[in-house]
Image (cartoon, rainbow, N blue to C red; front, side, top):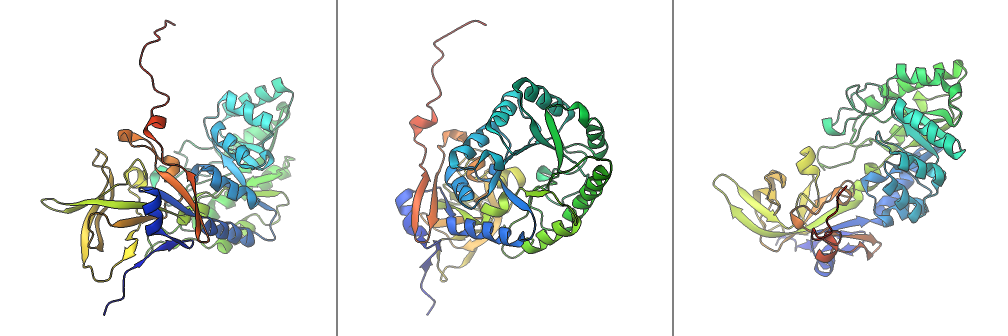
Length: 420
């Protein structure tokens, strides 16, 4: 006799019961898994003067940020909205670094007034703007120059950020000129280096190459009389999206590469993991709507769509997809797994083998804790899905399913006509 079908659980919560109570599509996160990942990285960094600055863009839900705050983790932000979220969640301003190529003057002003840890500066114009704003406010901005080391992160082109053709950072030659003129920066304390070469990195070699170039530059600057009090090594650690293929870098090996490359450095090290801390802690629960037999392939139509999880349509990204209830009696069947959005790109998987599915079956799309809900939209007027935090047999709704009225709340008829 085959073994009976057993419903899957996440952090001690029955997922079948959870979907019945909260509906689908539904983002669910394991608090225990997030804490374990944080603790594992903190343990690996033991002995280094290092601070973790979570990349908020990966998952900016307030409940997730509160987990980071409780664990002593700071934040890497790229907008004033992310700054406000972090402060609201209890992350101290002096543990927040501000990255990104397009910081506005208002954003710089707000971050300066909040007292953030430092700005990761990405262009000479930004540096001069920061100097002007800080001078006008009678304050001093702490800053690091983001180096573009021209290193291939060996990842998807759209999430590679460390090559000379990418928009991020400046060359070492340009950064050298910034430090040579540092004395003219009366209100910017330029004493840090920053590098981030990309995301979903599964090899240590790109890190070795990038950090070797940063280390050489740090030593050169120190010898020239420019103290470097902080080196931010960025993030990018990959996760397991394909259970049978992806081999993520061990935290201890990553920490060892940092320690070896920057041996002798006496300042503060910062790290900016995002995906690494939250991706594998999350799943997207979705229900089968119907099976459609095409001329050449069989489509499995589910109620989640590209507006709930953009990674497959945006990056051709792979996510493992499995039934919540594993029934060993069902034969394996090949499906194209698609959502209801009116785009051919609304496809989660092609020619994917699953146990035979039926309308109403519950599936889970794996490793969606990063860049799932945070990139979601209301395309096709589909309200945002709910989010739930799971913790040792209990759950809490951390974002309710968006009502239609809330989705259109900012819209209004064209009645109040004005001239400029």
